Amino acid sequence: MKISFEVGVQQNYPVAQLIYRPDEESFDMVPVPRGCVYSVLISHYFEIESDDARHVIRVGGLCPYLSWKLTESAPPEGNRGALIVTFEKEPQPGVSYQLEGTDEWPVLVNPRLGWVCIGEPTFVRPVVAVEFLKGCIAVVENESLRAVWLHPESLPTEVTQQSEVGH
Image (cartoon, rainbow, N blue to C red; front, side, top):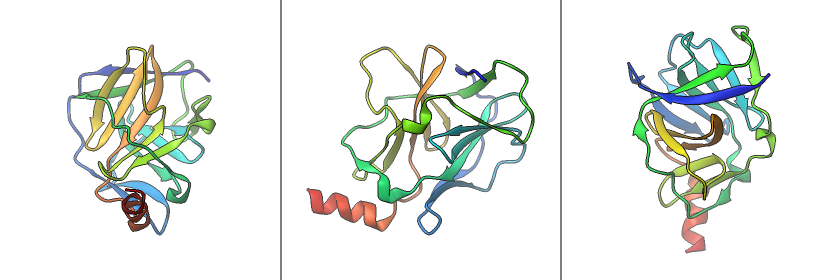
């Protein structure tokens, strides 16, 4: 199913903190926002979830830090707003839909700045960046999601130590 994305005005900015759980090798949000209805899988087991209005209100899922590659890149500046998911056909609540082409997306980390990028870290083409949740920036190009930048409360110790050794 074709899935597209647009940036809109955020009515109610969800109050949740993005965290990374090293023991589970996964991202999560606390408290978990209520009202998650639709799920889009990105990069195997990482997902973004939207409410019935299709505004993304949660990110989370498996994202093993041992496979992250180091980068010096940083997310583009993004204004606060809504990330809105549009499905080609009416989606079924509770069913996860795979975003085509994202299985091969790299996962990069900039330990110095505390950001993790799932997707393309840099762009030469015009893109729109939106901070749709606290610590979460989406990069959209022509209604296609190109990257999700995540800034959890903290990164795994092994990641921050790897950065210190490399510099």
